[in-house]
Every structure is written in C-alpha cells, then in structure tokens.
Amino acid sequence: MIHSYRNLSWKNHQELSKENIYAMLPVAAIEQHGPHMSVGTDDFIIEYILRRLEGDKAVIPEIYALPPIHYGLSHEHMDFCGTVTLTTATLASLMGDILSSLKQHGWKRLIILNSHGGNKGFLHGFAQEWKRRYGIDIYVIDTMHSIYYRCAETVMQTSPDEEVHAGEDETSQMLYEFPQTVDMGELEAYFDKKIAPLPLRKDSWMTSEVHPSGIIGGAHLATAEKGEKLTEFMCRSIIEQLNSLEN
Ligand SMILES: [Zn+2]
Image (cartoon, rainbow, N blue to C red; front, side, top):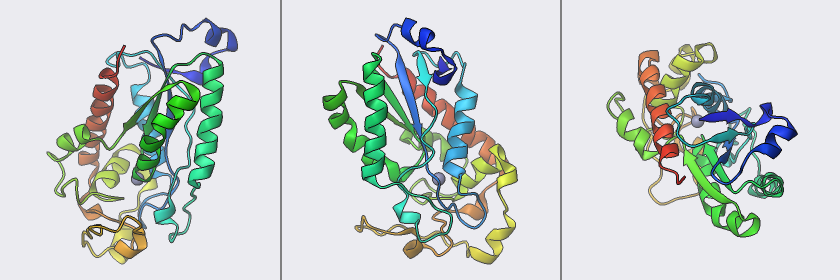
C-alpha cells in the first residue's frame, strides 16, 4: 500500500522497520504542453495518479511516498514560454541530498516514479552510481511504460510511437483529470493536425524544430472518455510494475 511519507512524525519514522519497505520519490516537470494545456501537465498527472493509488490495497509492497520534485529536465521545450528546466547538475545534486538523508535514516530502497520522458535517460543512467554512493537500491518506474502503451493502443487512434508530447494521450488524460486546465479551442489556431515524427538519429532535437505548436502527437483526437480509460490503464500499469518489485 502507498502511504504518505510526510504524514509521519519522526517517532513514526524511527519505528518503521526499513528492511522490506520502499521510499518513493515522484519526479515530474514544468514545461510547455502545447497552446491548449498547462505547463503543469506532467506534475498534475502524477499528482492525480498518486492520489488515486494512495491507500489502494491492490498495491502489495509497503511504500512511503515523499513529496514530489515538481521540476525536471526540460531543455527540449525551452523555446516555449513558461517552461522551467533544471540542469542535470542541479537535479543530480538535489537527488544526492535526498538520497543521503534517506540513507542516514536507514532506507534501503527507493522507487523513483517518473512522469516525464526527458528525465528518463538521466534517472536510469544514475541508478547504479547512486547505489554505489548511497547503498540504496533504485527502482525507476515510468508512467509511460510499455505495459501502459500496450493497453493505451486499444483506445488511441495514434500509435504510441507517434505520441511523444502533448498529443492524444496526455490531452485525453488532462481532459478527464483536470478539464479546467485544457482549452481545446486553442488548437484551431496553432495546430495543423499534422503528427510530426521525431528525427531518426538526432538526439539533440528541440521540440520547436519538430512542430511549432509544441505538440508531437494527435492532440486533436483527444477526448475525456479516452482519458478516463487511459488514466485507468496508467494506474494499472504502475500497480503491475510496483507489484513486480522484490519483497
Ligand atoms: Zn507531458
């Protein structure tokens, strides 16, 4: 079951036997999500999912969720106003401070729940260095995992490969989870409904080079009905990933 880390007193924390339990750190992003959605989209989605999963008995491991890191690595979106990015050095330093605090208090396992594609390479890449440095086992769980996409394919008109950013997938979820933050009317003026592919080999692509709207995917195909199903699939995918962790 997922519990709230910050609800516990120091005495409660001291009494926890850390042998078979996990701390969880959600990591999101504050970045442009097209002209029709808020810059908080990744942060909102992870907040919604966690609210739904907290206390759910379907989650087998005992997990204590820390308050999230709201910012992430969003360099690819910096051409769009409102995006706030950390550098890898800052995020590594912040993660190091959190890990060293957890280590001092006896935590042995940390799940990082990541809702932003731009954080993926960094988090997976650092896991082994963090293990060596802090002695804490690291499990990176991505909200956009293949388990999720296998289910999502059954309701989306676009393919998971086409759904890179602020498209049918995320827009549908936001129409269901936080409809007040979405304005589909803005799509008309800024989005030509062309689903632009990512460059085949260039890793340093910037979103503005791919599509001037900031959308990479089929945002115009989004509906709240699809969002309800996609939200359910995402929760189930996260539960399945959590339940596959070792006891
Ligand atoms: Zn996003």
